[in-house]
Image (cartoon, rainbow over all chains, first blue to last red; front, side, top):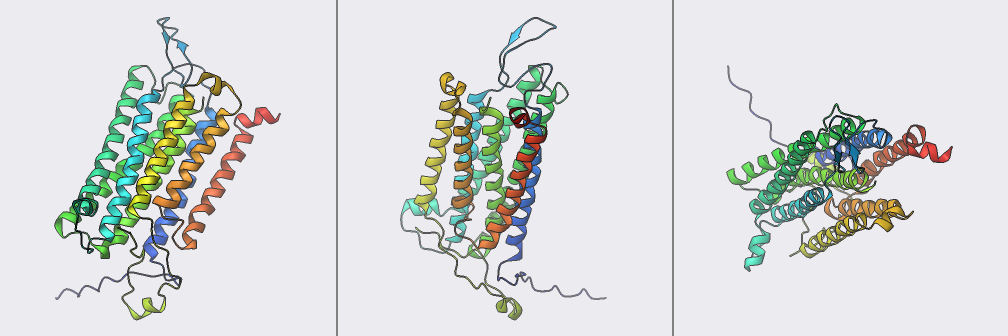
Length: 221
Length: 122
């Protein structure tokens, strides 16, 4: 019994002449908008309705110890992690541009750096991992200060919202690692631009979700 | 160095070629545009955090609208320039802004039903 020959790898195009993978990622991102808005809505509805502390923006007195505790959100740390995630989006567009322009001649040192797709993919993955490290630090410190997912309405909605976002960032980092593996194995070139573009769209979406979360959860009291 | 690669790979089959892109896609932003966008995003974020630490501004009526505006501005900048929605086919805009609009209306509706907007209206 002989194995059937593999069909040639052809990409499917819609009647509009668009690659169906790109249409699919935009449709997926649209559905993700609905998911995150439902989580953000839940957070906003429960905002300010926790009966017991810790609270996000207000001091509170722990009844068991009598200690007055500060608001639990750490704005400087979260601002730093927000900056890191914003920069990761810059690295991602530079990675995409590097892949798209791989075949162009690079004369200067600056052009060689800008055209190094591995460098920018690494930078993006490292920035994403750093963001996750900030989130792990934040979650750990919250638990040490007495806030868990079961403590109050704020804890439940906060951990659910930011936890889902963190899971998406984790998936994005894994996606970037697979692109890096492909780049090291056979090199990413202009013909692979769509692969990187799709990953980049997902990554930027994760970034814009955090832009909304940072304002609505952390900054608005 | 400009980034101007097409967002769709060239069709392989005859059928695919029959459905080849009808519209000429616009050039993507340049490297310098990406850096400028990053700088603008950083400055807006710094402005947001700075505003958070001004008690008189936080207590005023303009604090929340200002933050929402700045956040929406950052959102739009990333979507238009980094996600290339400004330069891509309009069907992608529909696929993104359609659900986003439905989601935004749902959020506003839920806030009126169960959230803080309910109390202000009543």
